Length: 324
Length: 130
Image (cartoon, rainbow over all chains, first blue to last red; front, side, top):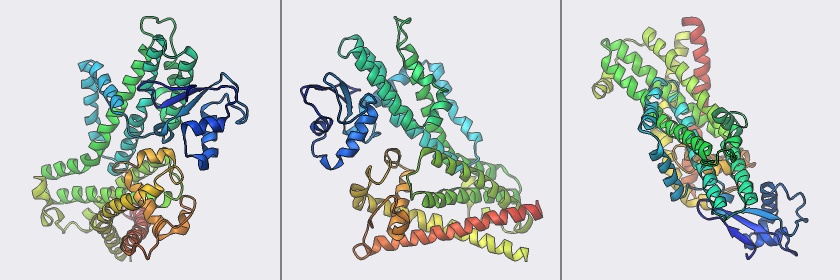
């Protein structure tokens, strides 16, 4: 691999190869991924996707720079490297106490979202996982910029790396989340160098990383809170309600909506797993689960009041005792 | 007539709740560990799951989507040909896992019927009573 080099942490997950006379694409791939001859077609396709300048797999030019993924980036989203986790933590420490407090205060907002426990929780959990597991693609860019400034990599290599990381990030989190969080084309623009800001050209990048960190943390908290808050809130309401019928009605609503939410999630999953499931489908299932669970909960509450109000569920099952 | 339907739907729904929380979820928990040992090393890769799926099916609660995929592939292999070209588990070699998977699918089939009935019932109830 004398013509190849890997970038230092956190960009170590990419190889760069300068094409020499006589090099072939399959030969280069074989050098970096030995023993993968059976999957050569897939590898060639992947390298061509990552390097749009290669139009023909049989035609690479000497001096051309080819970016190749390591095993971790081929698997795309492995666990975040410890140093990447530290980076996220570092971002947190960089925030002002007011900002940290604002993020912490985001969690109680979800207390109002009792609608859709399982569904909403899953959707937020997915969002948090997606954002966090892809954070490394973005945190690598300001560091690559430092490498470029210190002369470790050229401007061309930095631009290529930046483009590859942004494309990978957008592809992984999905275009809709990208547009929702950042707005059309704003992310790519934010991670471009701003020549006018010579004192702190990566300021915009850091701001966007802070924003991402904020959303990710809020989603994480929201997912966890949503998972339990509905039942906890219902329990609190049961303990506060004076009439036994009212206590029972709340319990029936909570149990019915939880059972429906989980059932819809499970049934939808078993029907959808036949083909690969994207984030859009997961969020759609989460939303459908949320809406239907709320609706059936309301119906069950009404049904209890009109037909089964003589049955004391909360006292017979000990729910009242637990909630009190 | 409507009263009988209300009772039938209530029992069907309670049955679904008990089936899911008392049987299916513990079963999926057991199957998760069995599949992790038995199938993950062979099938949890790019050939059978998308890159996005590989990234999110690693931790709770989304890991159970993977468990459900394996479960369906074991009991109804013909319906999972897009993902798994061959049978992923031979029934004779792993009768216990097959039986547990079969019970899971039966509960899910029951839940599907119960859910469809719940939605129909909800509409009828809303029209006549609310």
